Length: 226
Image (cartoon, rainbow, N blue to C red):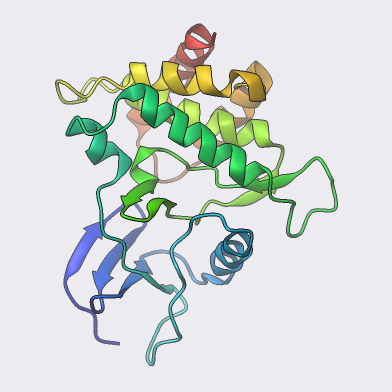
């Protein structure tokens, strides 16, 4: 399958341009994208903002996803450029989590469960002309909403503690803003943070340095909670 310009690379996948409307997301180490496509289709049917799924493409691999080409900065880029304040970004992430958790589970029979993104942070939110769109559903699952809140806040705390964070990229105001917005939803409890820490510690794509910061990151979330 012919791919165009490499648009970006993450820990697990590369994104290539196909044309003006579609991109190819190709995983480097996964065998199948069936579940990710199913989750995106499901939440999209409820009106949740996800990229449109493209038509099957000749020569595509099982590790390929053809998705809508989105135009606009990530939430991270908008924050660094001063286009958004931390309070606005925190409110946006909280709203997206709240709207996602209002969707009933697709598979689970537990009525307390909902769809979880489990990696909803500023790098996975694109700000398009039509509004915010959530990308990268490779970690999605179903379970209690508190786990999703804990994953998002723990990720921000882990990044905030990174000694290599560039000057001017302080993440703590965003973490505080998000926790304030999530307070009425139950916030990130110590129990949920413990589960999130275990899940992140088992993530093979984190570096050892990132894993080593997880205990301190949990404490930062708890200390920053209203």
